Image (tube, rainbow, N blue to C red; front, side, top):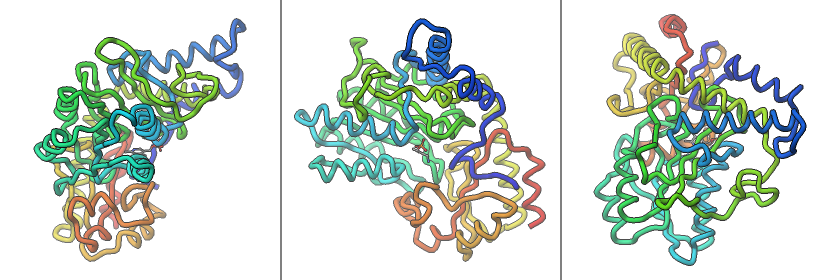
Length: 373
Ligand code: PMP
């Protein structure tokens, strides 16, 4: 079967699996225990993973905190900042095209009395900077949370520009970078305006249930305060508690290390594969298909394609024995896409859209399967 649903999840690389197995078996120590070797080894392995994530993101090692995935990271920042600073300001700005881990958290906060502004987007799902600046100036928020690269249509927001605007207004800025890490240059070393960033291991050939949040130090070099989601032993410098899931963290670390070492090759591969797939689909289906993406400014390897007059659920189901595809986000697959709706697509076009998401480890030869359909 040809797997083209890599925005939903990816397969674990053999090196990642092998590293994880070691920490599931012989190296089973608790990294918070002391002195004996398997505890110290587990601790060192976690710290090595932290370094690998820091290298990939371009931040300090002590700005990386491990979580159970990007859902938790997003919840942690939004709820944690909202709770800690609610007396100062209760306005949060986000967009209409975020992942449910942001949108549902915002709905929860709204019900608690927070004021949430959901920014409109253009036909590719990107915010309008002028509109954003006006809203920000009129009603300065506590926090802005904007997705870096969209999980359904692949469009990129101008994250550096948004970060700069937030910085100049002294507003916290969080970005959900889950879909872009390992597929773009995401080094935030020179982006002082990005205070928080979420990521997930299983989108970059690591394990599910493992992710991270970057919490950058403030201009004085001090940690930003927020209310933790999980109280307890304070294992992640009190930002998060719970015994470290060592195998999952080392899996994330290894996946981050490989993604960083191969970044350029992986991007080249994704672009090559995407071009090939576009050509094959165009030749095969001609006028019957429309590409929804902004080809010039998007996540490499993600294509959102309308098959005119075809129901996307039926098509995905009919192809399921040979090709794994999806109609959009796996996290909201039962409903028509809120992302395409916010981009202005009518319901019939939403219901005929399919997402193709490649991995750098796909092969051009595999794509020939479409020629045989
Ligand atoms: N944000 C985005 C943009 C995503 O694509 C996903 C995964 N679908 C998440 C957050 C949630 O990540 P996780 O599965 O690690 O909780």
